[in-house]
Every structure is written in structure tokens, then in C-alpha cells.
Amino acid sequence: MSFKSLGLSDALLKAISKKGYTIPSPIQQKAIPKVLERKDVLASAQTGTGKTAGFALPILQILSSSRPLRQRPVRCLVLTPTRELAAQVLQDFKEYGEFTDLRSTVVFGGVGANPQIRTLRQGVDILVATPGRLLDLHSQKALSLSKIEVLVLDEADRMLDMGFLRDIKKILALMPSRRQNLLFSATFSKEIKQLANGFLHHPIMVEATPENTTAEKVDQLVYKTNKGKKTELVIKLISEGDWQQVLIFTRTKHGANRLSERLGKSGISSAAIHGNKSQGARTKALSGFKSGKVRVLVATDIAARGLDIPLLPHVINYELPNIPEDYVHRIGRTGRAGASGQAISIVSVDEDEYVQGIEKLLGEPLQSETIDGFEPTESLKEILDKKAENKAQNQRGRKKDRSKNNPKNSSGFKRRGRR
Ligand code: AMP
Image (cartoon, rainbow, N blue to C red; front, side):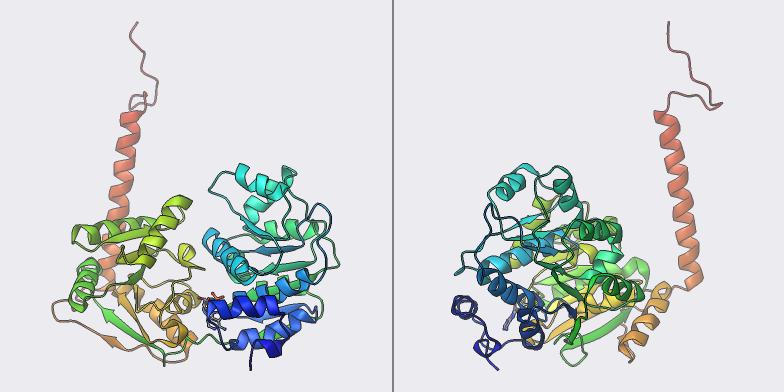
């Protein structure tokens, strides 16, 4: 099947061939004709399947087939959970829409609102946004959603995980009820179904299993070791394997920073990317990683969603996620575009229950090995005792800090200042 046979215009076909795509991906084959028919679509697809072009191409065609309205109000809104995904989606719209007259822009938090407001004032047809900043700008009257013709919720499951349901509902109420709705989600929980039932009209279901979530493309391996040996093991694997581009997942922002520092000290260039980093820092880390200047990117799940890193050979789970679906998202970062990749999980005994959850989701056991000198020797009780001790120590430390900084004496009364 060709892109031409999907009924796309010459302007779009030119952009597609400039991108070097020859065959539409399964999700594109299924979604593009339905979106062009102006149907509501409920799509099960995750990053790596070509889903963005699956909605961007037909939307560009629909909007360019009618003349822009005077003052160019926003006619298509794409909501995404993260800034990185929003930036990526905008870039795709710009590239696919290069030979159309349509204007698109992006708004998200973490950067100044004024440049965004100025661009919106000039009029745009397509707006990609994260929910919080969109609502901010709407309340400042910097934009109107009253002329929206097409709404896309991209990675809707992640938006709900991040607590955006209330924002989404508020945004839905700001738009005309007659519009086309497209919902993309990697998973279909009860909550997603409820959301979909609430605003999609007779949706067409389309589904694409990503090329890269199955075991045949991604070589998955678990290395069992002690908690305290994980960093050393990661350094050994990267150095001895001479891995040049590695994405590592940690569960916490703090953990991401700590690991990135340790790698740096071992001579492995590395950057951390997570929600506490400024937008500038995240963009810099990602571009350094893509260009090869940064060898390892250490990321939390939320920060990594939506990153477009093609052909990633190695993904390491420094800690396993407690949500099994997140594991599938993580390993979906490797073996993209048909290339094979390796996903390694470094697992301590307290994570055994996560391994079981993942195996249940995958429907098969994960292959597990040990490396000489890194065999697991800790018991679960030892880890739990250590955790409790650390917690108590932290609490004691915080108390000490408080009494040092607080101008109260230990009896709780304010000390008199010197007269
Ligand atoms: P997405 O799932 O939208 O994040 O896209 C994943 C990657 O596939 C991106 O790097 C796209 O540029 C690329 N891509 C999308 N559609 C095609 C296609 N039909 N042929 C080859 N690559 C594609």
C-alpha cells in the first residue's frame, strides 16, 4: 500500500517523500482513511508506531482543504502529556505541513508565556499543547477554542496517569460540541474507556501493535544483583560492552541525578532528564544524546515519554517500574524502525514482585542471569531493614537541621534576642 492510495494530497505526498517514508505503517494505513472520512477514532498505538503521522497527515489535509477563517483562530488542538512530546508533535506537523499554507505552534509550561502569546495573536491553525499551560493562556484570553474542528488526545493514558483528567474536562467544555475527536492511547484502562465514552461519537477503533514491544525484536534480559552493586554493574556493562548510546531508566528524579553523576565520575558522559529539570536543560540533554556527545541519558518514565530517539541499541532499567505497562513503554525505546535492540533490567530481590507483574503482562517469563562478582546475596529482609534505617536516619537529619535553623530552643519557646 502507498501513501498516495490513502488519498493524501500532493503537498503532503511531497513532504512524506522528503522524510523518506515509502510505506505507511499499519496504524497509518488504518487511521488515515478514517480521519479523512471525518470519523471519531479511538486508536491503540504507542510511540514508535508512526502514530503521529497517523493523525497529523489527515488533519493537515482536512484543514488545508478549506480556506482559513479570518483572524485564523485555532482549528485543531492536539493535547499531549509532556513538553517533549508536544515539541516533537509540533515538529512533525511542521515537517509534514511544509508544503501547505497552514500555521502551527506549540504551548507548554516551563518556559515564558509571552512569546507563545505573541505567536498565538498572529493566528495559527494547529495548536499542540500541554493541558496546564493551555488553560493558563485561555484564562488570560490569549486564545480561543471556540472554532476547534478537530481535537486529538495523544498518549491519553499517560495524561490520566499524570492527573490531567480535570484539566481535560475543563478544556473539553471550552470547545464547540460539533467537532471531530481522535484519542490515541497505548493502554486501555477502565478510566480511558470512560473518558472515551464521554466525548467520542461512534468511534472507529483502530489498533497497531508496535513493531518493537515483542520479544522477537528486543532482546530482554534480567541481571540479578544486590541493590548496592547496581551502579557498578551498569558501569561494567557500558564500558566493557563499549556501548555508545544508552538510555537508562530510574524510578526517581533523585536517583537519576545520582546515577548520572556517578557515571560522569567514571568517565562515561551522561545527562539526567526528569521533571525537575528546566525545559532548556532537558532539550540540551536530549540533543547532546542524539548527537552522540552524551553517551548515556538517565531518565524517569514521565520525562522519557514521547522522546523520539530512533535506533536506540541499549536500554537499561536501573530499577524496574512498579507499573508493568511502563516496562513495555521503556523497552519500546529500543529496536525501533526494524533494528534489533537490547533491554537489560538490573534487578534486586525487592523488585521480584515487579518482575512477576511484567511477566504476567508479557505472557512469558523474562530470561534472568547473574554476572560473576555481582551475584545477589542480599535477602529481602536485609533490604527492608536497610531502607527503614535510612529513613530513620534521614528523619533524624531533618530534625537536626530544623532545630539548627529554627530560632526556637529545644523547649519550643522562642529565644529572646539580645537586647
Ligand atoms: P511516532 O510513533 O509517531 O513517534 O513515530 C516513530 C518514528 O517513525 C518517527 O521517527 C517517525 O519519523 C517515523 N515514521 C513515521 N511514519 C513512518 C513511515 N511510514 N515510514 C518510516 N518511518 C516512519
